Length: 148
Image (cartoon, one colour):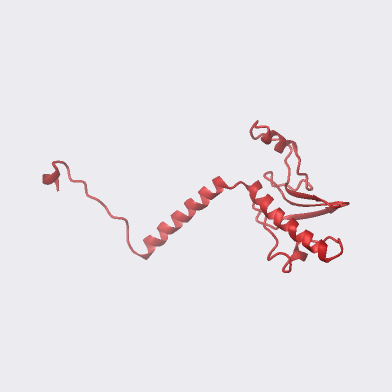
């Protein structure tokens, strides 16, 4: 080849072959895909989607039980939900809080602390205003439903 193309011959090495090499390539690709997915999907988007699905299940439960709320999200399984939605921040089940005339389905939020279902903290206001992330009192992420 060197004589034909007039230069130094560069030896091409092929990719490792075999089952072990193929499995290692697949594992690297999966890690890369998970990393890219984590850049595209924010935890608050996942929490909002999962909490909304759980809120719809709670509303179906209320319709079937004369307006009564379930004691916990686990009470919705298996009739209204296949499984209790998972908090993407902690990996545990989403939280369910009842109060007079309202209920909240929430995650602990990015500060990883349960702030009692506080969905409107100073931190989220600062982020929404475009001032970037700061260390301010954190908020839970989720959905609050006012009962009528």
